[in-house]
Length: 95
Image 1 (cartoon, helix red, strand yellow):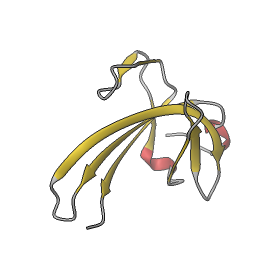
Image 2 (image 1 turned 135 degrees about the vertical axis):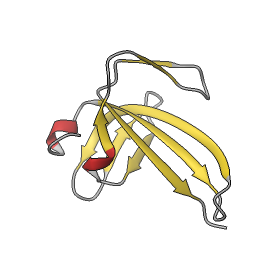
Image 3 (image 1 turned 180 degrees about the horizontal axis):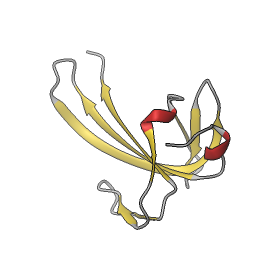
Image 4 (image 1 turned 45 degrees about the horizontal axis):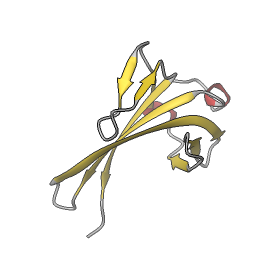
C-alpha cells in the first residue's frame, strides 16, 4: 500500500473491476490501467493510453504494490509489463 498520495503520482496503476447486480449476481470483470495523473483526498485518476481518464475512490488501503511481471488484460489480451500498483474493486450496479 502506498503511504501517501504523492507516492502514486506518475506511477502505473492496474485496476480490476468486478461488476455485480443488486442481487449479487456476477455480471463481468473489466481491467484497465494508466499513469496516475491525480492523487488527492478527493480521488485518484489515471490517464489511459488512449487518453481517457478513469477515477477511483481515494482509498490508499485498496491499492497494493504490484509484483514484477506481465499482467494480461482478459478483455483485450493486452499485456501490462511491471505496473507499479494494483487496485481491485467490486461494483454493485444500480437496478
